[in-house]
Length: 407
Ligand SMILES: Cc1ncc(COP(=O)(O)O)c(C=O)c1O
Image 1 (tube, rainbow, N blue to C red):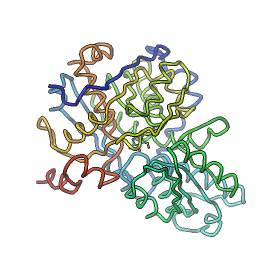
Image 2: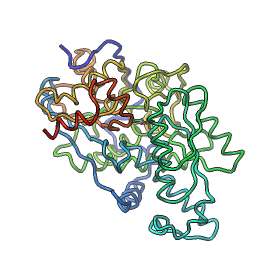
Image 3: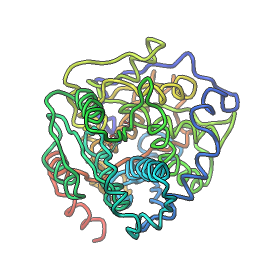
Image 4: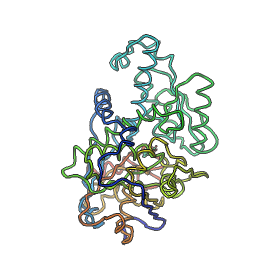
């Protein structure tokens, strides 16, 4: 019996992946090696910074026929519930400092946190489109560093996620259509009202801010690699627009060089723009409503900057069903196979679900070189960022699962 349903599993190898070589010049051009040190120094100075835990899923690894399975748990990141806290807020910090500098103010982070230049900071408005977590990060960054913020959400973003963004004082605007429609509206309104777009996705002519977002994410990857007892052979990482996967892939390459782990990017069935791009050999968009329970991954267009990295450094692309993701959430909530139970959100577990589904299908496992000798790292990118959705999918509230952990 597979640990998660395998129907709907798709695998696409990336024939262009550069394996057995040091980090390519193309990847370095997108993610310079100096970026991590700057992001670590900045983010490490923010109140509440602490590395997130790396959980050992030894029982699930045994049951899946893997040597080791480690889960980097971003559920507690800065109290925001997802790894996205590292990216959007970091980009807000850098953008606000740059804008204040243009007005003759050399603000340090401590100045922004203390409100020293509050009036000048409030005159800067940042804006973004989001399916939830990125908008929460931008709104939180604007809140702590003192600028104004307008966040665009699309039709299917849940009221719980909307409330979480508004809680940081941002103005929230709901737009008809999907995530990509919200991206376009945010950009158009920014132009009209003189706001600064802080997007996690890049497009022609808009690369610097999304690069900062990705640099912020490398802090998560670096923490994980520093905490591992042995280098991973495989990393399974979920993809929305691909920024997180690209940050992880680039940092893994920096950390392990030519011996880097094999990178598998995992997406939902209706939003597999990265897999389709790998199949086509160029960025291609996926249309439709992109419907999936994995709300953070409901993206139809790749980030061009992320694609630059993933075309060289993303070895395999997988698609998993919503049922596989929900099964993976339940495995973790139940403390399956003797592992300690914990809370993981629906977008958090896509990488894990992809790994477990791949391990259960002999042809896919063989294609990925996955087996008893594999040391797999997955990135649990969120906790229960939408508690109502979590309770509906798992059958228990996040509080009930957490109470069972500490019992
Ligand atoms: C929890 C979670 N995991 C993963 C992702 C995917 O990140 P990216 O869009 O950079 O691929 C998102 C994006 O919103 C997310 O919220």
